[in-house]
Amino acid sequence: MDVLEEGKGELLAWHDPDEHRNWILENKSRSLEDKRMGLKEAVDKFVQDDNYIAMGGFGHIRVSMASIYEMIRQRKQNLIMAGKTAVHDIDILIASGCVNRVEVAYSFGHELRGLSPASRRAVEEGTVKVLAEISNAGFQWRFKAAAMGLPFIPTRVMLGTDTFKYSSAKVVKDPFSGKPICLLPACYPDVVFIHVHRCDKFGNCQIDGIMIEDFELARAARRLVVTTEEIIDEERIRNAPWRTVIPFYLVDAVVEVPYGSHPGNMPYLYYSDEEHMAEWLKLSRSPEGVKQYLENYVYGVKNFEEYLELIGGVKKLNYLKQVEQLRAPLKAPWAER
Image: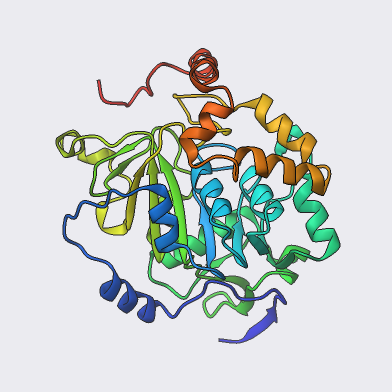
């Protein structure tokens, strides 16, 4: 195959598909095992310094923020992060010093809330390196290639763009048409965190609403930690098998963390905490403000439950529930009745 052009971005989280398959066979069980554990144990066990990590969800929606705070609390270091649609999650991980390298599709902004002072400051000062760039679709297809057990996936996205120039993709001559085609390398993150609406103790997961790329991401992950709003009985899972979007054999740990996406949104359950995110964006304008936020909300509490009490407890959480219920039905239309 003739290579016509190569991006100059660093190739990250790539494995030979056969090596990855063998690794999965050696390190993951297909038996039904109780995978419940605490968040502190899950992060300590599966996140190692220098890992390439990815978070499920999208932007501020259905992101496992509880895991983010625990990684910071445990002072994980030198992490590389997939900035696929990363906003508050990557911003606070960079600000805390946990992440110092990124592969970027969409990062360093808080969407309609404005730019992200802390992570932008880190990139501008050189304490965080952007190792490669890619499009949002490109990230999803990198995960899809890994999920399919392929070394790459052919696409027509990014052809002729500067995004391609800073990516790890290659342009080759299509052997069928003779035209240029872009090859996106598979992406196998070392650790993935996905927050779901419910699952059983084995890791069979249900998600209400759009999955974004979590279907592919769960199948691309080396290690997958599922945080969930609730752990439900296995019988309820079996009664609606079509709703299991992440099966147990992909999952390494199951952690029950109600409100685990706070201060982000959990569709049909609670809205994003705009007041809290505004506080972060105000404080993160300076290194001193970042330190104040982390000391108060991360290092100053023992766990996520204490954090929830600190941000307003039951009163604030009930308010966020009410706001979400004004925006959406009490239950997703396809949910169990």
